[in-house]
Structures are given as C-alpha cells and as structure tokens.
Amino acid sequence: MSLLEIAQWVQETSFSVSIRESILAFPLLEGGHLLGISVSAGTIAISDLRMMGLIFKKESASDVFHQLIPWITAGFLMMIVTGVLLLWSEPVKCYNSIWFRLKVLFLFLAGLNVLIFHSSKIYRNMHEWEWSPDPPRAAKLAGWISLISWGIVIIAGRTTAYNF
Image (tube, rainbow, N blue to C red; front, side, top):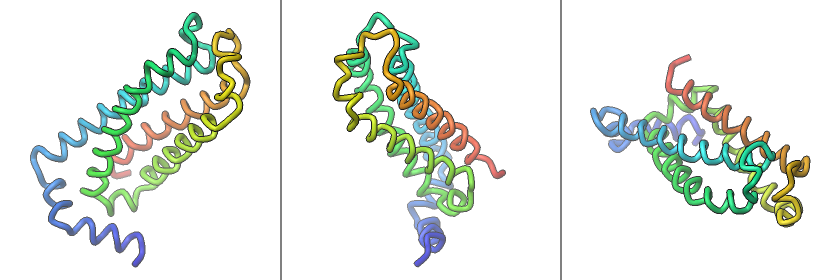
C-alpha cells in the first residue's frame, strides 16, 4: 500500500470526515495548533537568541533554558497533537502539498539540530561559556539553524493551509 493510498484511506474514515466537516472541530484545532506553534516557536526563539549571545546577556544560558523548557514542551505537545489531528482530517491535501512536505522536512531538521546540539560537547560544557558575551561558534550555528528551520516550518505550514 502506497503512502497516497494510506492517505486516501484515512481521509475516508468517519473520524477524518467528522473533523473536516465539523463547524467547531476544525477551526478549534487550527486555533489550538497556531497557539501551540506560537508558544513553542516563540520560546524556542528566545532560547536560540540567548544561545547566540544576542539577548539576556546578564542571565546564564542554562537558567534561561531551564525556565523556558516547560513552555517549549507544552507548546510543542499542543502543536503535535493538534497537527496530527489536522493531518488526519486532510491527509490527501497534505500529501499533495509541496509546502507540507517542506514543513515536515524542516521540522525534522529542527529536531535533528536539537538532538545534535544536546549530545554535543558544547552543550555538555555549557557551564564554561554560558556567561560569555560571545558564545562558541557551534552554539551560535545551532541557534541560527533552529531559528531558520522554525521560520520555514511556520511559513510552509501557513502556506499549506491554502491551495497553491
């Protein structure tokens, strides 16, 4: 069974139809998805900007990260749950959308960036640079990759909502 055939099967399920045709479900999911993205991506951006040494220079990077983690996590979970439900409601549209594919690609890249950074020597030795006005180049690079990836995820995601 191909991915398109799976998408077509999902789209024909009663659950998919009920979300798609509901007066309340789809718009509430869409609003919840946007709220989750706003909270998660907004706090990730703050974290990235601190990691690059551009904001909160008088705060330790680890203190900023630890304060933001619950917000990042809550927003991300809300974004994922609502995103899966939105995908379930229109899987064929998403399958056929180059914008959706771009969104998924950069969501994967953002996740890979986090995994690589958190397993790196730079992260493990954050105590050595977290107060520095000029963080290590690798930390800055990870911050830029994250900001750009999330920006593309948001733009491609919003563009997916329209039939281009």
